[in-house]
Length: 518
Image (cartoon, rainbow, N blue to C red):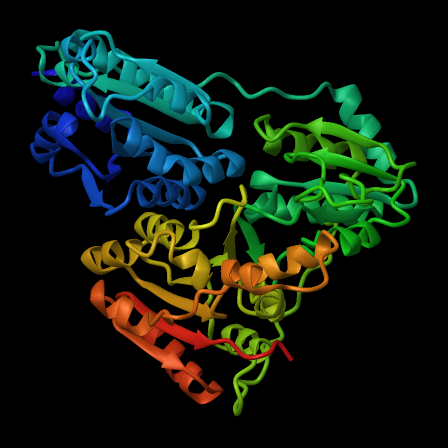
């Protein structure tokens, strides 16, 4: 028994049986330990950002943590962007990061870096194991930290000698601390506030899907308040039967318009709404100046208990019927390919209980709306704004839910950040249909340039926005990673490719040559 083996056994005893890994030399003893425990599922990702994005998607669907295996400070740096997204989504992850052996750290070796410093910038909990005998205990503490507050980022740093040194064995992980609950007087005051004209209940995290979403809908029906959600959401119930809510849009001017006339906003499981960026002459927050924003339940608090208490205080019983989306599947469109038609085709073909990972950004403004009345499904979105989430998030979601179809919607610019995830999809034979919207550039940046008041785009700015010359060939890129692919240039070819992808049991990719949105 060494430190590495004691950690693997601690993971397994705590119910953690999946690790998304990109190991290096410092983690070889951990890799050897994994090899002795076949019940531990090890998923190789060819980029560290793929490991953390996958662990994020895994948590969103599994509602429990996975591990990642990372290599020193540079490896953690590569993993940082999708850890930022995971932190914003409230996902629990246990990062295991190998470092140089303790006695080697005195030297300025090439890969030496401040692992602790870079970890603390994004992790809720960071710890360096001092010796092999402490690894199991520290691993149990990391698991507890990752499961605390409904999901946190925990990072355990293991100097190489702590992995190979002698250890006693696994250590049980204690239950996370009880979630905070608001005082009942605060809940009752919120219930009364929601009954006033113009009141809004803004929900997040676990209130956005499953039975808690239905409960939020019953509260809205009983009080007459408006049910709203933010722009970027970790997981959202979509399609027929989901309680109706208004999702705030991305651009600040229409977001302000959405909240006109709102008399109060009560936050339950979410932060207050805010503009994505600051813009000249525009406010940072979209609500009216006279609209108070009241914190009822923080994202890491007991959302389920608070919703139940709020329903009781408002008089919403199980007989209260929320407004829900009706099943209204559009006809399968034909002819010239447009983004609106792509959305209709997705809404026509998406199977019940599918998972959609969306990072299509500008294309998504047209593709996602028709799916509101499709068959019931879950939508996973970007939460932290760091692009490159979709493909690894879909990888993690498919690993967590192998019995569910996964559809990944991504722009070509976003997909280039983590296209290595295609290889992992192929190796694991994950049931994912990837749709890449090839708009040949960072279209969102063109829009943002206009938002800050720049009306003309010069040669240098245009060169920063386009991904042309050479043109990205997503069919070739996918096939080079082992994923079958096709290019759709009309609706018939798109529908055929999507149907084929959904009928298969492995990964596939469709490159959609983006037309004008109309």
